[in-house]
Length: 147
Length: 226
Image (tube, rainbow over all chains, first blue to last red; front, side, top):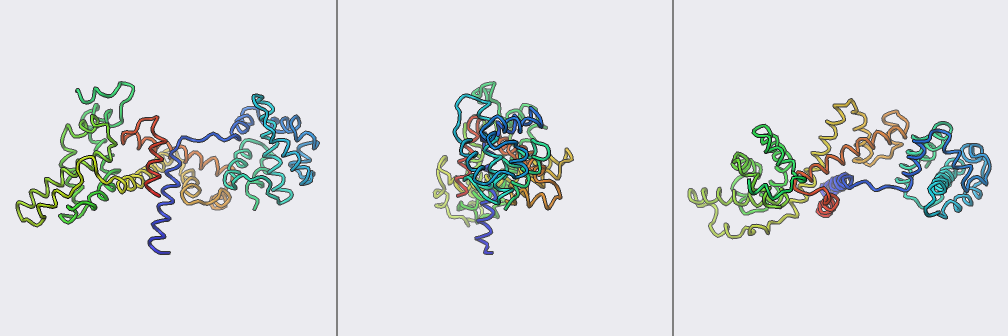
């Protein structure tokens, strides 16, 4: 590598780190992560049952263990993108459904659905892994690290 | 002191607080200034006609030795309203002019007309200084973060932070290196990131940016790196 290339790389590293000095931007997923941390391990399946993903059946069987087809996952995921202004419960149901169907497609069908930047999606899925218990923890971990 | 009365009591800079502590506080303020600003000032000195008088490190060292020993030096900055890095550059120009005049009288090696080719006060070429300051802030904040986490027996948190945020490795790659679950690595790297962010913002506050201006100040420095 040329010294100019090394200098450019060093500046890019400096810029990447300096950008961390900005006030943190709140992600939509943060509301879901905080809700799961507060309400405990049963909360995720509760949200998945009562939200748009409820049409798929038992969330553990269909989503964590992979019984749902890719087409069903994409259909459920589309329903999760409606957005219900002002209703926190429905907002959380849709967030849970959105990320769980995205994760299930990666884990069980090796499919990337959606356009979330890989690095951002990886961070959200790992936050969900840290906020849940088995079998969801391993499910989100596998989704975050899936190629 | 009239100059410092200009600052409302709710806004006190870190350096102002150090000066109010007396000798020990002034020593802490000087140590901070020498460790963070030496690099940017050397870059600045290198761009002046006085660079040939001595190595930039020597010029800046003589500047610090002369000016930081003066009790009213930083109080004058507090009254200026300028970013400390820019104010120090202007002060360095005056110091270098004094050095040059002394040297010129002795040897006439530095041509007299060059004294007039320096930028006037307030027109200093700050872009290179801002870039060097950005580098110095990141290096100092990294060192502070490592120390902060190390004191709390969180050295591995720093490693997770550094490998992911500084080196650009994915959480999965860092997890493999540290033999930890990736979600755990994410939590550890986040602790490092939060400590690093606090340190960067503290450096910018010490440079004179107000709390509400910190994000804008980060953008100014990012722009200097492009």
